[in-house]
Image (cartoon, rainbow, N blue to C red):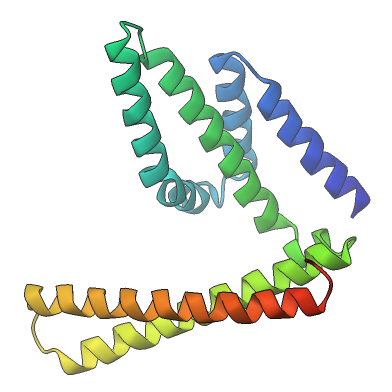
Length: 178
C-alpha cells in the first residue's frame, strides 16, 4: 500500500506540474486507455461532479478577462482540462484501490473518512426513501408538487445536516480533533 500512496502523490504532483495542454491531454489519453472498460462510467462521474463548479468559475473568468481585454479561451481550456484530468485520475485510482485501506496509515484520517462515508450513505438512503415515497403517492407528474417536494426534501436535508454537524463536532472534540 505504501507504493500505491507514493504513486498517487507522484501522479498528482505530475499532473499539477504540467503546464502544456498537449501533455495534460496526453496524460488524460493514457488514463482513458488504461481505464478502457470503465472510461465512460468514470467520465460521466467526473463530468457530473465538475459541471456546475467549473462552469461557474469559467464563466466568471471569461467575464473578467473579457472586461480587461484579455483572451480567456486558452486559460479556460487549460484549467478545465487540468481539473478534469485530476478528478478523473482520483476517481480512477480510488475505483481500483480501496479508499479505506489507502488512508489506514492515519488513525485520524481513517476516522474522518468513516464519518464522511457514513454520512454519505445515510443521506443517499434517506434521499432514496423520499423519492420512493413521492413516487408512491403521486400518480402523474405535477410540476407544482415536484417543486414543493424538492423544497421539503431540501429543508429536511438542511436541518439534518445542521443537527448531524453538531453531533459530529461533539464526537470529534471527544476524540481530540479540536
